[in-house]
Image 1 (cartoon, rainbow, N blue to C red):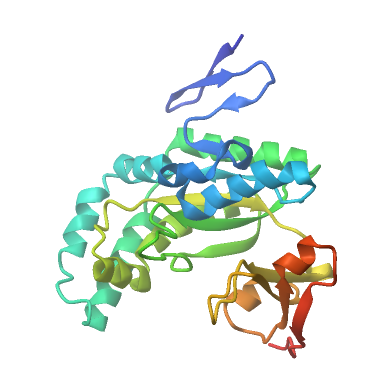
Image 2 (cartoon, rainbow, N blue to C red):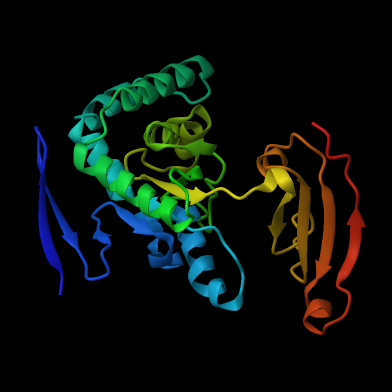
Length: 287
């Protein structure tokens, strides 16, 4: 049976529900283990996919770093608690022509500054800190290093892909850095590129929200990172898996900074237990 505790400070009374396992039931935080692909509206496309992979592949021995999602509800709560929505709308009303690059840059900067100058609500701050502390304890660290990733609620739709338009922050360590990175992720929903794309695709800027994913970093500096695609991205051929890899962090591949190694793996051959690599190419991997 759940127990209830009250924690007070100078400004606010917090109501926390502690379940029998000793974990805090949070309003704005979801562990990846609690998230499925059907939760895009709550945690965005990227976080929903991470949750699906962890819940479905973990039992098969696939090791995926754990973490948690700060939900889209937290994004709206942050905006509302700082009375930002109307101010942001007034700024965005200045943008009447997305081909006017100067105006796009102006309104984007103004909206991002509004968000960055906002104050994280106390109860949301506490939930983020609590979730981060639990994650650090899980990995036996006082303050574990994490990737802080943006996950928009309109990502990876059948008719449009918003992936890569918001920010990701790597090697974040400690509460202060984490809270700052969370705000920067929220602000990145209004990058110039994201603004133009939403207008071009007919999306209302204030019907799309931003969830923040916080995931344990792995020591790729000691080995390599890679990106895998479930089909051939050039031809659309679905019987292969395309893998690109390089030394260090995978961000260098995603940003096109390095020329990675490339491997083409044939799915049916792999399933039959034969050597499945049908093509490989060595990249220089230099930046």
